[in-house]
Length: 227
Ligand code: AMP
Image (cartoon, rainbow, N blue to C red; front, side, top):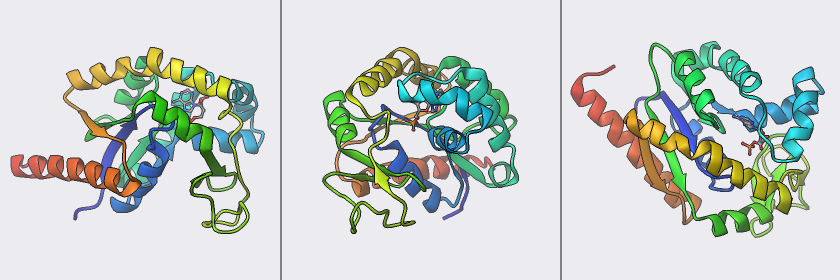
């Protein structure tokens, strides 16, 4: 397996993007770039970006495009991502972000955009039971908690319910997804970059589907002689 891939993963909140993106970043040996994780870290460190973002995030609102894309542009110009690629999680969320991303990733572009499809009632159920590690962002749920007393199995951090996983904020985020992010699916379809993947079932089953789709694409590119 040749490492390296330049990938965007789209999907509603609770579709399993975080879990799948961590697995894909290990599988293809590329950094997992999550705008949600980056923003939470800015909030935690009380940077000026974090202070501006905090209340918007708590209410489930989107952070202004320019602020997010400046942060993404800086991250995607670091050596690890320019050299090996990335799994981008949580971005783009608006057409303006997709346009800005198109410029950031020039001249190579993206290999693939995955749409992880999960019905809304199922994502609502998953979000209500979701728990995360405050330190490393590892995902758990009330049905699959960490082994010991809500302490993260990976790093020992405290495992909690996210502040924006309240019923009100979840509703707002899902509405915003429909209004702002869903139009991106046809935007990427027109550019022949979109692959739709069934995101229901066990995390292992979903990973097999996603890796199968990425590897099929890489074989096609290789057969065509693309780098
Ligand atoms: P996530 O962890 O991806 O669910 O993101 C958590 C929150 O961070 C979102 O509800 C937004 O407030 C903010 N956020 C993350 N990524 C973006 C983005 N690309 N554009 C705007 N806001 C974002």
